[in-house]
Length: 493
Image (tube, rainbow, N blue to C red):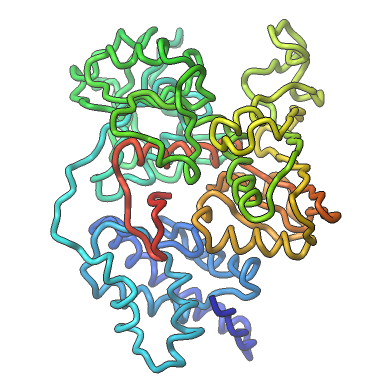
């Protein structure tokens, strides 16, 4: 891809800002209509524009300067959007940032009209007239950290309603008389991820709450087989088990004996013969007949994409993975009994050395790295966002500059661009990555290279980023795949 030309410095920054602000405001109804009416999602270098504010749209434009050495111009992207709005597009995902760079930095100089360029580039996305089969019902079994973030993602991505639709959550009945209100309140407010983007109302009579128009039944049960989903109008649903109570095939298959369930996905590493799927890497191993799958762990999702990319490019002979992990609900607030070593000590007060199975789990997804990695973990007193440190011996010499540029290209333009994000700022800290949708964010400033030895630092939102990966696996299980621009065989986001 040709590098962006440098934008001219405006004579008056304030006037320029107001003009671009007005353009960003005019994008909102176009982006909204495309998503709502045609199920067309617009992005800027992987960042969704759907339901963004004016300032967030402007920030998405400016963010591109971190990776392309220049920000995008709203004066140009609005023209791309307006040209797209003239087309009869089918359901798809379109990166208008990449379209803009491609046209204004190259095609325009060759005399192509913008309308003709957009129509030509998006010709494979035109509506074929085929109707979607309808929404796929999803049920969240458990409503903890991952369950509530999955609910936020599912509701945010409902759009026209023809894809995945959250129909119910299954929880144990709490002792409080206002249990339903408390469940809804936990979805509405989150100490780490902020307030829910939308409205939530509670319907006591129907034992449900309504989030942005999505009615979500609250079903009380103590065991998977105790639920009759069909009695609630739910059929052939995908169950997302985020309790972690059952992790083998026998336990998770109990969901399949409930009426209305077709498939089950576990939001933790699966045991035994259960396939551990990392979206973007081995999701093509999912077969139509698979009824029980695992989305692996947050750390496995964070390290596998960069390990795969680096191994393919440089080769990995051996390595060690150290995770600096935010504390989780499994740990104690104050010192108390815990079956695991050290985890009984107070999570907010200590660095807790513990083990991680992520390094061994890599072999289930990337067999070519079997026996080449070791791993350990330190739980730290932060509530979210973790870091994986990859200390690897490569098969050939490289430099920091070469490795960083390879990872930048991988994050921007490869088939792993939805899994790997890229940061080149010397000032970022963990809270800057809260809400990151990527499986990991490569920190270029921290890279260390000495010949064949490299130390790489990867940030990851172990809650939200992981939940986005689970959603991508859900899409694959449901047979949902959106054509994209730029074209990719990966589908989904």
